[in-house]
View 1: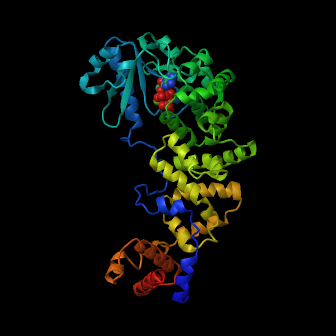
View 2: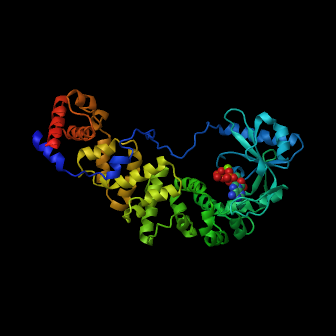
View 3: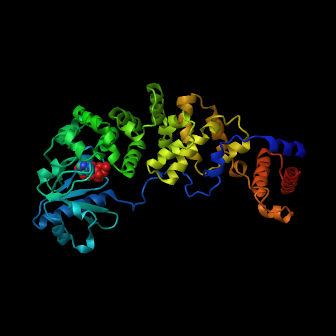
Amino acid sequence: MDLALYVQKRLHVARYLPHRTLSSQSLTRPSTNTLQCPLPNTSAPLMQALDPDKARVFAVDVVEELRSCGYEAVWAGGCVRDQLLGKEPKDYDVATNATPDQVREVFGKGRTILIGAAFGVITVLGPRSAGQIEVATFRRDAIYSDGRHPDSVAFSNAEEDALRRDFTINGLFFDPITKEVIDYVGGQTDLQQRVLRAIRDPEERIEEDKLRMLRAVRFAATFAFEIDPSTMSAIQRHADELQVVSAERIAAELRRMLTHDNRRRAAELLRESGLLSTILPELDIADEAWQETLRLLEAVSEPTTSVVFALLLRPVHVGNHDAGQVEHICRRWKLSNEEIDGVLFCLDCEATIRSANAVPWPTLQRLLIAPRIKELMRFCEAVALIVARQMAAIDYCSKKLALPPDELNPSPLLDGDTLRSAGLPPGPIYKRLLSEVRDAQLEGTVSTPDEALELAKSLANATDS
Ligand code: ATP
Ligand code: MG
C-alpha cells in the first residue's frame, strides 16, 4: 500500500479494542502472572511441598506422644472424613483432653506455636515435609453473639467437642492406633448415604455461625452430596444473614467451590439456597439466562478464579451499561487486583476474540500476546461452545497462537531512541507513533527499520499540518 494513503487511513480508522483493554489492562503492563499450562490458581498460597506419608506418620506420632504422657488423643474432623471417603487428607487435626499448657509441655516451646491458643488450639511443628498439626483441646462453645465466633470456649470432653462441630461428616474422631472410628453424631451413616447434615438442630447451628451456610454448599458440591432438607431449609431462612461474614471468608469459599470440577453443582446450590442473592444481588436474571451460566461453568476447562468469576459475572456485564459495575462487585468481594484484572480482561476482550477473523490483525495480535491470553482463551472457548455454538473464531486464534514466536510477535522495527536520533521532538506523540508503526509492521506495510522511520516521520508531519 502507498505510504501516504496508509498514513491517512490510520489517522481515520477507529480502533476495535475496547478503550479499557488498551489503557489499563495487562496488555501494556509487564505482568508477573505469565500463564503457563496448566493454569495456576491465582489465589493459591505458596506452601512448602508436603509429603502425605510423612504428614500421616507425624499425625500418628503426635497422638502417641500425648498418650504416652497419659492424655486422650484422637484425629478429628476433616482428616477423618477425607480418609473414610478414600481421599488423602490435606492436613491432620488432633483433639485431646490435654489443656493448651499441657500440650506445650509435651511438645516443648520450640516445637509449638500459640496462634489459636484462645480457642484451645496449639500448632505442633513437624519434621521436614511433614507439615504441622493443630492440637485442639476438647471444648464446648459458649453463645455466638456476632453470628460467626463463640464468645468464649470451655474445655470439655470428646463427645461435647463432637457436638459443637458443624456437620455430622465433620464431627468424627479416629483412633490411629486401634484404627477405630469414634462417632457421636451419626457421621458414618451420612458419609455412606452421601448426606450433608448439620449436627443437632440445623437452625441453631446456622444461627451461631453464618459461614457454615457456605461451607455446607462447598462440602455438598465438592463431595457430590445431597444437603439434608431441614439443613437446606435452615440455610434458606438465614441466607440473607451471610452479610455478617467477612468478604474475605466468603471469597475464599467461593474460590474453592467454583474452581472445583463440580462447580456447576456449587452454583446450583448457591442459587437454590438463596445465598447467591446475598452474595450477588445484581444477578437478577431469568431462569433461562441462569441455565446458560450453569452450562458455561460446566463447559469451562481448568479455569482460574478470574475465569470462573468472569463467567458468573458475565450476565451482569452483558446486560449492563454501567462499565464499572463488575469491577465494583469484585472490589466488594475483596478479590485481589490480579484476579480483578483477569475478570475484566476476559469480559472486555470476549467480543474481540469472538470476531477474531474479522478484526484487524494488529488488534488481535495484541490480545494474543497478552500475558493472560490462556485465561482469556479458556473463557472464550466456553462462550464459543455454549453461547456462539461454533468454534471458528477459537480455531482461528489457536492457529495464530501456534505461529513461531517471531512471527506471532516480531521484534519492533522502531523504538523511541531511533525517533530521538532522527530529530523528532520527544513527547506524548511518541507513544502513538510507535503504536501506529507497530500496526503497520504487523500488517506487513513496513518491513525494514528505514521504512518504519519513514512512516513515523510522515505520521508526525501529518499530525503537525
Ligand atoms: P477442609 O480443610 O477441606 O476445608 P475441614 O473439615 O478440615 O475441611 P477445617 O476448616 O480445616 O475444615 O476445620 C477442621 C474441623 O473443624 C472441621 O472438620 C469441623 O469439625 C470443625 N470446624 C471448622 N469450621 C467450623 C465451623 N465454622 N463450625 C463448626 N465446626 C467447624
Ligand atoms: Mg482441614
